[in-house]
Amino acid sequence: MAIKSRVYSYLRFSDPKQAAGSSADRQVEYATRWAAEHQMQLDDSLSLRDEGLSAYHQKHVKQGALGVFLRAIEDGRIPSGSVLIVEGLDRLSRAEPIQAQGQLAQIVNAGITVVTASDGREYNRASLKAQPMDLVYSLLVMIRAHEESDTKSKRVKAAIRRQCQNWIAGTWRGVVRNGKDPQWARLNDERRFELVPERAGAIKFMIEMYKQGHGAVKTVRELSTRGMSITDTGNPAEQIYRIIRNRALIGEKTLEVDGEQYRLEGYYPPLLTADEFAELQHLAEQRGRRKGKGEIPGIITGLGISYCGYCGTAVVAQNLMGRKRKANGHPQDGHRRLICVAYSQNQGCTVGGSCSVVPIERAVMRFCSDQMNLTRLLEGDSGATASAGRLALSRQRAKELDAQIARIMDAMLSDMEAAPQAFARKARELESQLDECQKEIESLEHELASASSRSTPAAAEAWAALVNGVEALDYDARLQARQLVADTFSRIVVFRQGFELGNNDDSSIDLMLMAKHGNTRMLHIDRRTGAWKAAEDLNVSDVPSHQVPLPPGATAV
Image (cartoon, rainbow, N blue to C red):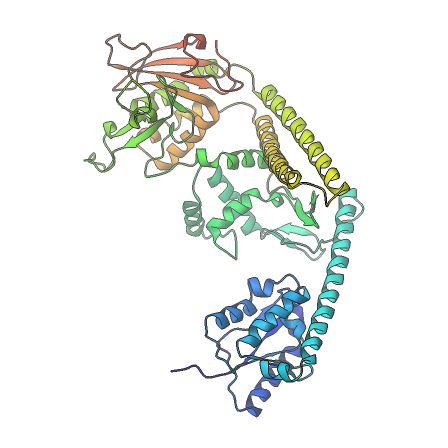
């Protein structure tokens, strides 16, 4: 059965407070009366009401009811002959006139009449054909609406810019009405922000779970179990990663006005110190390496630090989870294995076979649980010098790229007509390089700040407390151990058949442990039990550089 033509009423308020007035009631009354006079039915099945959505920025189309109505027209759900009643054409759009007229044309061309309640005008194909000047009139209304909004927008931006500048200068401490405030802060009666205790507690708990390596789904589930919530809107799992990056965690409001960014320090009460935030950003930048995957998170795989000792290619987990398990449901030790990627893919490694990862994990955990061994391993430079040097080079590179871009832009502006397209391509290429350089600078700054906030690496007690949990395949314990491994080692090299091939000793696996900014140790371990038969300082010059090249900043004795 064909859908009958109906009357629809659309209301929009750029500020929700406007809805408290009588204009909404007047328009509903007008729409009801208009429908009755024309013997049509007022349809309220589509919720055509946008409160707090700007027609200048087109939010009412992108995320509001008008956008729903326009899509319904495209889908054929609004029949020809229907009527849309609005207070005025400026309710439909305050965008640039050509865009605003395009939206009016979309509605009219679908056979729908637009009626403006403020002046009783009707816009449809027949009326605009009979009275073309009505089209000119509609354009004039749209031009005026856009100019009004554009002028207001410029004034608002100028006011916000002054507020930001005065805040940074320390001469003003009012509320800046721009952007969204974090849901863990609220304004009190004195017009100052304060923490919302229950929400702030949830955010802190979420951050701790994130630092331990838990994923978003588990974190949200744990928050729900505890009756906690981090957000009232949107998908909580998606919100976690936005919150982690939000500088409001350190009390800073960050906003952008016409491409210029302002950071207002001390705007909100902080949840984290600057050092804690820097460490959190450092973790976030390494998230892909740190987050454990699967039923049993690996503690040395998936971090990008474990390599084959014979060819230098990565070694990866090879878990045979579908085979017969132990009585407790865990896989057999021999079913959790390490294999060289190059060998498994026939890409050049000449030493075949895989080995169980269980004795390797056991050896690493127990070795680091001995304070004497751990201290000897970690002795060395903090790495700050190397990182600071890389940061200085990156900053210099950014300065050079800025200068190159400026020279190209000056050349293009001096003679726009003669400027070759190659100039524009080169400018875009340099801008891309500058963007990558800025990201590297930010990452190094986080790394240095994070390193300075940590007094010493985790003590042996932290490792010892996790040994049993790692052995028992406890998920949380293995995630924590994974973090310790990522924080301690720059590289773990596995010699599946021993450091010296051809010695007819098939009972051992050799490990080379390279500590971050510390020493390098060789463990000679039992292939079955993981007990280390010997541990010695290693002179890395004895190892072919093409197999296990030292990472930047690493030292060895």
